[in-house]
Image (cartoon, rainbow, N blue to C red):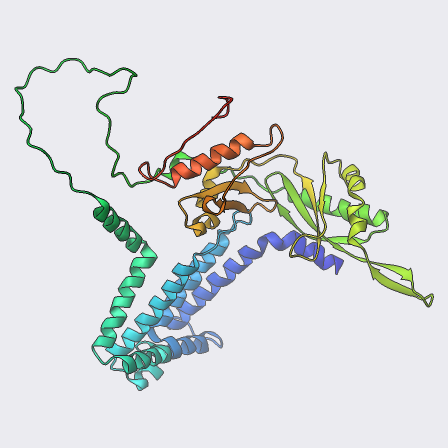
Length: 410
């Protein structure tokens, strides 16, 4: 088991690549089966199965598996991107609606559906259920309307239309009084009022475009020092074993400043009441009590032990990285966690121990206190909060009252 654990620890980072290759291979086999470009023990039954149940909708499986395969190959553990569940469901419903429409166009023929034509058995069944609710042509018209609406939702067109309608409704008509135009005289030099503010101030009352994310710097690619991580994992196991606390490292999570090693407590043999040796689980407190010895063995300035990690059955040992990775605000704003908040007061605060984005919604905070020692990043946190508000709101919807008694930070 220890050998298998070390193998998994070494090759865990390649799991997404393996999944991507498998999905791309499945996409290629599906294309060969549906286009009748090859025959085989697996390919022919697979193509017949897809055509029988999904009909023409089976061709969407080619693009779906290819898309998921490419997404898996581009996956990065430190930026664990997640698909938008709403859009995925919308695309699935669009596929089912298209299959039902194909069944309507084929005359709701069960023979054609069983032959792999139109929308297949699934499309025929959906079309029959809709036809029970509404007769033709209203049933097909309903499917077309739902299909168009889902297409607008997935493309984001519906949200843009709602914003334009809202802006048009809120726009108040301005009555322009009759103005007598005086005679034109040669223009003199531009005059600025007291205070240095030019007279030709741009009216941004109806500006709705948000600042582009290209204004913010991108993250720099930092490669993982896998050899060092494996060496530290081995040293942790060796140090704990020397103090009679057998344990094994079953994984690790790399963050911007520290790497958290997942340590699973082992078993020790002790004499039971009958004098026979019995295996007993290592207590978590025994691992926590060796924090200073582990720090000495790893030559670490500081070392933190989380015993146990909430929601997991292992102990987390956080070891500082040799070099600190710079966290850019742009990657936090682009993360799916930030988008899922769907709030104009969403805040990007940084990354946690495992490198996952840490975000928050200001609307859920009656009060907010940013505290810490000197150099811990309080000013950077405030700058990030202000930047998130500015990047996520237009000038007509955002007002800031900033008070800085020391006149230093802001």
